Length: 423
Image 1 (spheres, helix red, strand yellow):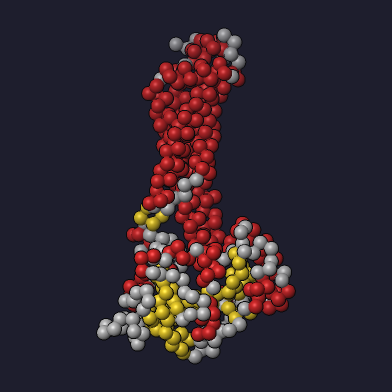
Image 2: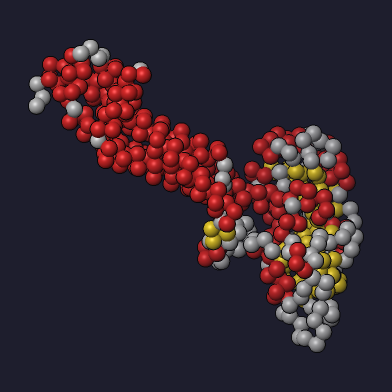
């Protein structure tokens, strides 16, 4: 086999220009796959992470009717607050916490936010009552706080609110100012409460920056007259891929079954999540097609080589090389081109992804018209990992060698007497 590899290397060097074009084709195909997979994986992984952290958790527990009324931010379908402590004792649960989602209207009228200035127009937002300190260990919401203005998470039990940069800009307030929140309690009674702006979020997500207002969970419960109830309980696990198994364990808890609660793993939170979870598999077929197009150059080149070297193949056969050896010789030529092109393309693509994983790509024009439910930032950060590089490298070799098999098999089937008669 070593002799065949040396012969293959010599044959490739005889036609340097042709070999270079084949290697370049494989290089470009693998490079495009690494970059494309990095971008797709980065988009899907970040989108799923945002949905898990901000919406579904790894497992969510609600009343069955709440799903139909969720868009209205109804407070009529609640779960017992004491259930969260019970579920926290389950294996593989790192955090079990309640949330209260409610509709709120924010204004600066009579809040003292800007003395002598006209109050801004009321801003409708989704209020979220959450245990911000506990959740921050998992969701890391604090990473979006702007450090330059003294932003911080609201203090437990305090009449404080965490707002997004766009919402604060519309209201004309800054950290330390006050806003008035108008809400309806669980009993449907209107209520006004004065909240101090504790922090400013700047995430690039419309949901956080413009459409949400976070308050401490106990503060929200007091404002809404919901001392012992949440609209949902979310569980977080150190093993996200076992969320379905965790959901089955939750459904086996007596109080959950007795109350007829709905238990939803993050993989089934919405149809969009189900579809996005399949995107990587769908794109894998596209990656194979991209590399196959590049490998076609190798296939075409080897086909021409076999036609040009028919007499040489006959001589090799007459000297004692078996059809299998001749086939291996041409496969070796294709494999060398595959390894060199795939290695160069994979490393170049990995370097490209590594560079842009920090800077990202601006896609603001694409996300500008999207609603807050589409959790995609205005910058897309590709995934830079050895897994992507190795995937593209192996794919490039496998597809290119497969493309080289047909002309190699053709060469192996040539009979010495017929090949030697070829001029």
